[in-house]
Length: 211
Image (cartoon, rainbow, N blue to C red; front, side, top):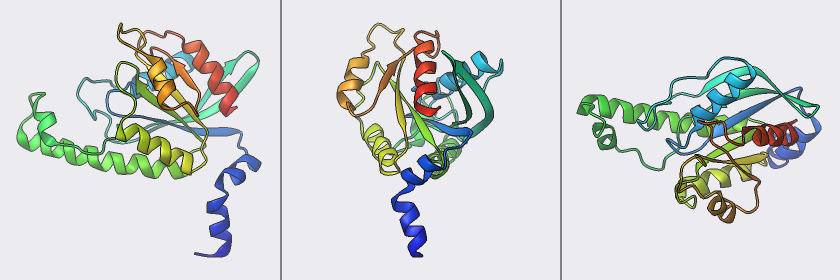
């Protein structure tokens, strides 16, 4: 590796800062079923009238990253043009038996598990090509998991701007405060991507942080 490449890698955040783009590529990350695609669909529906893809209760339904370019968000006189990447759910272990619980045959379950594992690898690779991250966490669950800690650490190591989205606040046992306590170093916005609750606050934060 040349000296120039090493310097660029070490100071990647500064290079991105001084070469700020007209369009920011933002990845939506998080564990399976946290609501990543639901959020991507909400953003696209609100600003383009389209959707990113289908949503399912089956974990790892999104097994390949999906990119939608040129999504313009305008809030309070500020605007930001985004290329949005909806990534597969991140997991430290993918067991084909989990898919069989949803009525799949063993063969189908193994195929899905293999595709999901490949999707996790792809999602991690995407981090090298992003300008920022929306990290979606399920506000009804304990946020201090190995997956969440690992991906937040990966994002921090790359110097990427990070906005944590505490999703599913429409559910009675949701606790965005637990997420704030687990990751106090990052801004947390509580929303319901499904119901659209507090979504305007998220758009305001996106325009402020990524604009």
